[in-house]
Amino acid sequence: MNLLRTWAIMRKEGRHIMRDRRSFILVTISPVFLLMVMAYTFMVDIKNVAVAVMDRDRTPLSRRYIAGLGGTGDVLVRYVAGDYGQLEHWLMTSQAKAALVIPPGFEATLRSGREASIQLLVEGTEPVTANTAMAHVGGYTRQFALEVAGDAAARAGLDLEPAALSPIDLRMRTWYNPTLEMVIGFLPALVAMVMGMPGVTTTLALTREKEHGTLEQLIATPLRRSELLIGKLIPYVISGLFGVALCVLAAVYWFGSPFEGSLLLYLVLSVDFLLATLAIALVMSVFVKTQQAAQLGAMLVFFFPGFFLSGIFYPLVSMQPLMKMEAYMVPTTHYVNISRGIFLKGQGLEVLWPYALALLAMGLVFMTLAILLFRKKLA
Image (cartoon, rainbow, N blue to C red; front, side, top):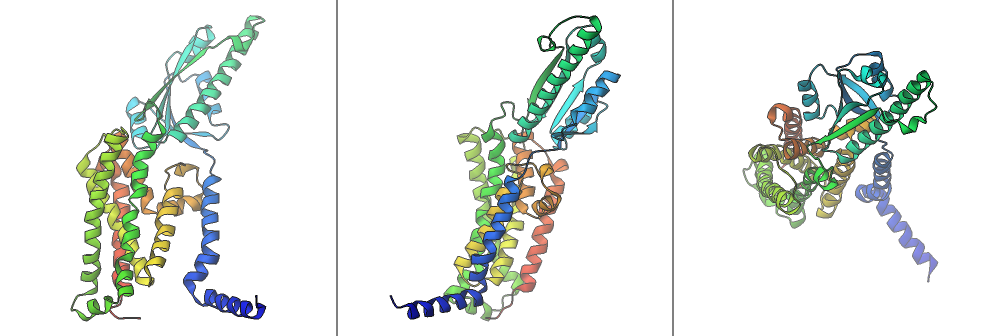
């Protein structure tokens, strides 16, 4: 092997990497980007799970129970309800992931040595979060029961083991996914994830024309920029809508997922999501020149952030503020909430409109950017 010839090739490739922005980004920037995204994702520790409480006893002991509930930071008592309607609303809208109901006579029952009950309602659309809430509330309630039993035994002068007494009966009930099956909780969110594929394909819309040399023919026509880009966008939206319908059929009839909401509303909001995703893809296709680079860029933009930042596996409430802000900039995050809400809760537009509005805004902004940035001329 001739070292001089080898060195010459090394210099050539080194210069190519430094001059070619695509190669430089893929080799040097993309690994650290993926590292940061994946590291932050796997560092997420589920904390501050929002809990609503309805204290119908309103005694020192019930207030002591509530005050100690958020002591570890795993759950956070964020809402105090005055009636069941408020609890149902907070669970339906996912503002609270669990709700505790302390019945009247809680303290009196415990002081008399009898068993008192507490009801725990859990929102089961995110099984990991639901299990965390159940485990923490269950463990805390057992510890609180032991303390109450020990206090009662000491006052009575009895030499009893506190562990032998169980003065609190925690009755758990899971809503929307009663069995807490992981596949039921994840399937609606995974539909949102896989529907990023049309975005990957749309990035090829202009780059294919550039590579095949047909963009010059389109430029020579009297087509306006908006007509050209919207004409390319709409067929992908329509074909993507068929993909959504097939995903719903597979989820319901193959995997047995419930579908509680309106299919028509789901398809309409899916169009909203597809417009946002495909508009971003068109902006990307304006800048890249090859199909390979477009596919790689689309994977970095749609799949990795969508997989790790959209709340599929970890609740957004447990993410760092910067990470949460990035998550809300990803269309998949909003579509995950829409998909879970319609699949498992039967939510309507009166609940889902903020997510729909965010997707519509993204679609309009990025479509406008694509039209403004696209030039009917060859670079």
